[in-house]
Length: 228
Image 1 (cartoon, helix red, strand yellow):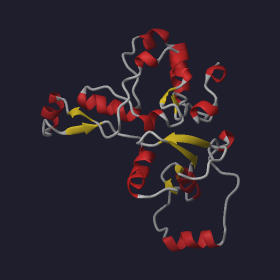
Image 2 (image 1 turned 45 degrees about the vertical axis):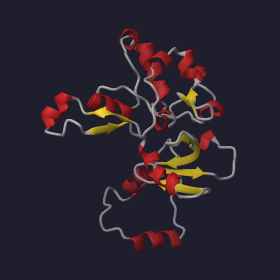
Image 3 (image 1 turned 90 degrees about the horizontal axis):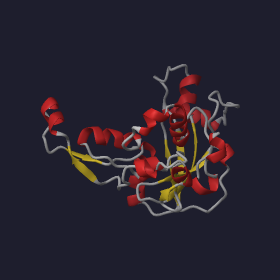
Image 4 (image 1 turned 30 degrees about the vertical axis):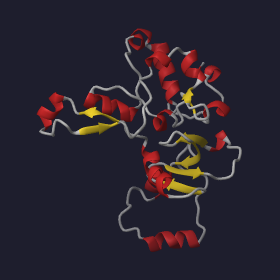
């Protein structure tokens, strides 16, 4: 059912992903299976802004999370996708604010309970891979690429040649903290490494990595299905 209503890749830059990695699919499932509970929702927030809300009481959304393979955002229009309007979610979406916005100080009860300064500021925040990209946006001249590593390896191209992305190969269009579309590709490199080393990551050196690269050693197919 969801595949019949989700927007095209050309609109959102979002590929169809497994295991609920398209946030729009999660909302669709919740609304279909728990309509009464979904109807009680006061606002829809992205995960970083949920915690900002818990800390400040201020509800907000932000483009780097909205634009990260959710089906909810159109990067080229800088607006919510047709899915949001089709499902009548727009009225639930908290206001979109820049990542750098100071939402407020922490709530008085939190300040009292934690001992933190009551004026401790809380900012809107941004998606983790885009946090890695932001310093380069502010200091480097395009074209350039940034590779953000962790459980996921995310390669992001800024100012490069415009090419057609293939959603079947886990390419997508992210949105950076300035609101601009960022062609990207990803795979679960960190998860792959953990599986290949059976969690024994200690003791590996840069020389070991250089040896693997020099030998052009690779493992195909990947052990982690559904990515790359």
